[in-house]
Figure 1 (spheres, helix red, strand yellow):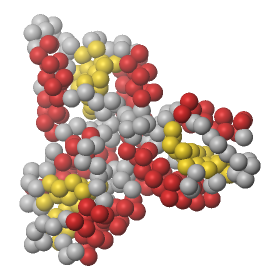
Figure 2 (cartoon, rainbow, N blue to C red):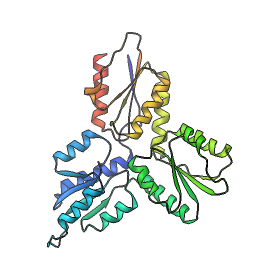
Figure 3 (cartoon, rainbow, N blue to C red):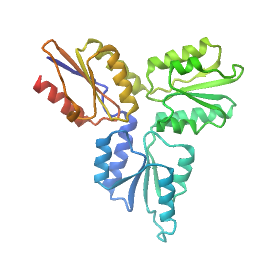
Figure 4 (tube, rainbow, N blue to C red):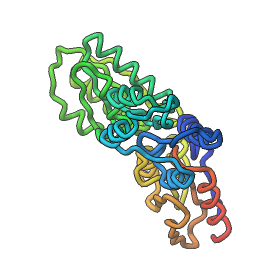
Length: 295
């Protein structure tokens, strides 16, 4: 049986940068606690390992305010700790609060996400309404929305685009969550164009996502079984699973090797493996070694 592992699987540039940043702070022996605002990435294995090394997660703005209150009477001149901003970025309000804490602040927001913040801020200032294509409750999208000064709409794909009914005389700028499904994005854009909206399209799906989705689709198209490895809360991993499932009915979505329960018949000649942008290399290797050894 042949096993194909996607070349573009595992940590992307932005995730690598964010995770390395935290481990570098641990290695330096930074004074005070090291915090991340939200899980540094959507991978429970990585977050758990960081917690074992003393890294604490600030889950929301209330916890951030409590932390600031606890340390405001700190008479020491040095910061009480270090806050690393996660790869997904944060809202403008949270960014401002973090910068006022007096802690050391390291911004590990993915540069591609930062670019969207800039686009939304600039286009809003020009008086344009903003449309964000993505998952409204995802931290990346929440951050993007906060940079709009006027009307900002969030839609989750073609169906929402078809139902969109706002003033067609206004000017709109449309951006996308960096990990959005590229085909659904294209379909969404076509619907807006066909419905007569005056819309400026800025395709902000990052190159890593594009490459990963294209490669996953190609492998799934010829595979008898497909394995997608990713965190349970990882948006880009879920989208990979959707893409692979369309091409290969026998597609498995797992977080680690422990979740893998393959039921392969003798007719299975080719197994494909891909992984989301927040999946560590060692987990990918464990899965592929297991499949190669046992089937």
